[in-house]
Image 1 (cartoon, helix red, strand yellow):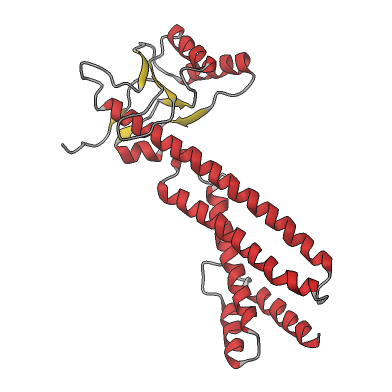
Image 2 (cartoon, one colour; image 1 turned 90 degrees about the vertical axis):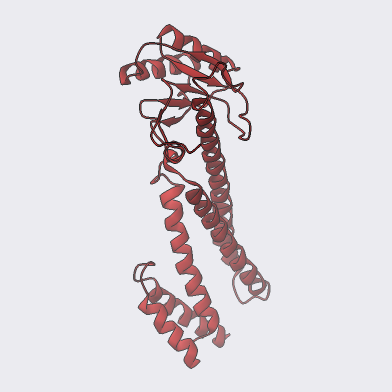
Length: 273
């Protein structure tokens, strides 16, 4: 028992030192702990736990930037999505590992049974965080598919026939200005009792990657076949605002159903033949 207590105190003291500086810099506390482990003055498990805590803080920083709002969803890229999911998965794996280590000690009577309570709470929290990250990743992927669908239409917009994904096209003459956008939002919220599900307003990372300027345009995540989609298109026609309503898939690209509000996006970069 004394040996366990001694190890616990060494770990607590040195772990605290390990996190006194930024996780992005070389940590002097962690370096001292490594030296003690090499000298046999501290258990290697303490070093592993200290390193795991530093890694956990780094992954938490990734989630704060991506999942919790510092990075807007329209500015996501494939790299951001991968980082977010991986960080949430690693944080969940760490608390699962910690639970697996502590449970035998509780069963042996070394730790009190209520020691598991905060770990179980943290496990539930991190499971929920991972699900939130997956939900956001799914939404970001749908946003990318919308941008790809619009790209496919823009390349054929001058052709004799429009591609199948565009269920309806309306060439309105009125500019899609901020006042008109507010009127559209207010009318939709009054009609359906919720905010209009806008998935992209202005140029997103995906539009930039595809070479299109989406400035002054808006994507609304509504299926044009739905009651809300049909109502929105009729209102846009009444306001004389141009739009494209997407309902299906572009060849080679599974597109999410949505309504592109505003004129066609402008091409920013030349596309190779």
